[in-house]
Amino acid sequence: MKMMITIRGDFVAPRFDLSSEVLIATYYDQQLMEEPRSLLLADVSAEILCDLALKEKVAVVVCGGIEEEHYQFLAWKKIAVIDAVIGPYLDVMQLAVDNGLKPGSILPGVTSKEVAS
Amino acid sequence: MNIESALQNVSVVSELLDGIPHGVAILDTDLCILRMNRFLEAMTGYITDEVKGVFGEFILRTNLGSNGQICKKVLKNGESISVDGNIINRRRKKIPIHFTLTRLHDGKGQPSGVLIVLEDSSVIKVEKLSHQEQSIRTEIIGHSPQIEKVFELMSVLARTDASVLITGETGTGKDLIAEALHKSSQRARQPFIKVNCGALPEALLESELFGHVKGAFTGAVTETVGMFRLAHKGTIFLTEIGDLSLPLQVKLLSVLDDQEFFPVGGSKKVKVDVRVIAATHRLLREEVQQGRFREDLFYRLNVLHLHTPPLRERDGDIRLLLDHFLRDFSAKLGREVTDFSLEAIDFLNQYSYPGNVRELRNIAEYSANICQGTAVEINDLPLYLFRTEELPNTSVPPNSSVAESAIVPPAVSHSVRPAIGGWAEMEKEMILDALRQSSGNRSKAAEILGWGRTTLWRKLKKYEMA
Image (cartoon, rainbow over all chains, first blue to last red; front, side, top):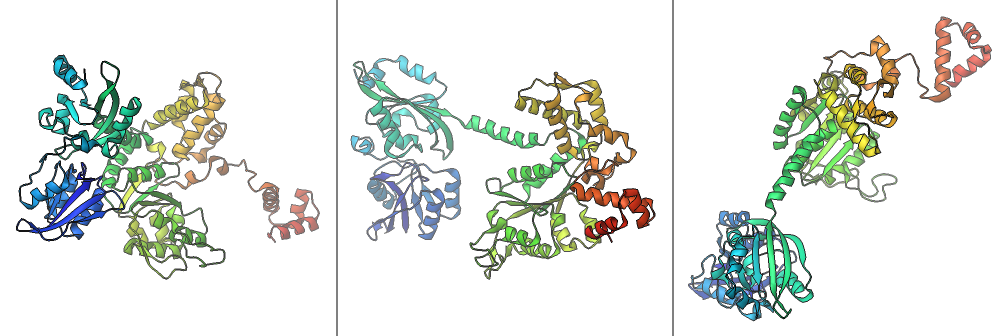
């Protein structure tokens, strides 16, 4: 199963439509199958990200804030969306792989001064 | 005392913030959330207690640059910033926001945080949108039942994507209607390209419409895309479609059918997605009968038909339009002409307006320029209006749909001959008059003209009248 996480720096990007980087991870039975790869996008656009999710045939998209129309589009394409997630993307990915990630999750590590720096 | 302790100590602050009818967030120097008021909690979908200490941008989800760039700038420079943007809240709703960011200071005057006020501007945006919709309608002024019918039909036509044929006399606002249809259609954000089919010769028009490749003809040094490709995803408005030549009609028909064409000299087909709106002052059905317009193209364009009523058939709109244009021109000219005298308005109400709204607008402009007082008197109206009234032939039958007389400028149809072609034209007229009087006898005609026979013969040769 493939998962796409929209990221910025070490964290899940606050907004889906403004994300310029994604992390794609393949996992099965709560195990990562390979080293997650990150993709840098030339343009920032929710449509491009939706296209990418389709092209990469991902089953799950993890992101921060996402607009309803993009959420519904992905849902219509049978892609599960775990949105409004706040946290360091590695922790988020691990939680998602463990099937423990829920929409609106706020993970530890986002209150520290490192975030602001 | 830092700002956090200040906020904890002063309980009044909470009530104060909650009393503000906009979203308010207080961030610390690390740009993490310290406090959100109730309004912002409702706006974002988060409550302060669950997000206290979280980096502000993760919660607010603004589009004001990454990593709180603007906040950092405010914190550094101390200058307040007001900026428009948006947020996406927890309920996946994008809200347009007017942000105001201000630096906060502690008791010692040291920067201690940032205050962000988030003003929901969606209400203002909706108002602006409805104003825009209104302005589309108000561009076409009128309250008569005839124009109301047009408005009703327009709102239906705007929702479709089919070709529209707009007919109506010259000056009845076909262009305005076409543009309004485009603006209120789903293609509103895409280009609206207007092409006057009567303004260009056939060869040029083909290249203008469909573009040409480099070297397609002498002088085609560069490739042009053509109006159809420029209007891709938008609307192309073909005005004076009745003047389109037959070969081009064939090409246009194939474009309408297949949505693809070959540019002039090109070997590669170009596909376009264009909505076509066509307009003409001619009676296309008659043109079809006379073989000047292709029947198949007529039916292809005539999917949806909208006829703009002539001004003389629009009950009560004349006064409305006169007042509108007079006010408009007075303001532009910085004059204080505000009204028409009773005599002038009576006269203008009776006038038949063969040039329709365009003519009425010109009358208002002329009056606004000439009038010396505050109300336009009958003497301030253009003189040609009175000449028209004196002649019986100029009145147009009220129910003629597309009156040919409307196409002819009023002055042309009278015995007062214009000097359009200059002296040569005048001389030809004189010769014809003389020949008419002399029943074709050239000697007598030369006598009437005061010329010798040879001079008349020379002039007849010159004007190819022999």
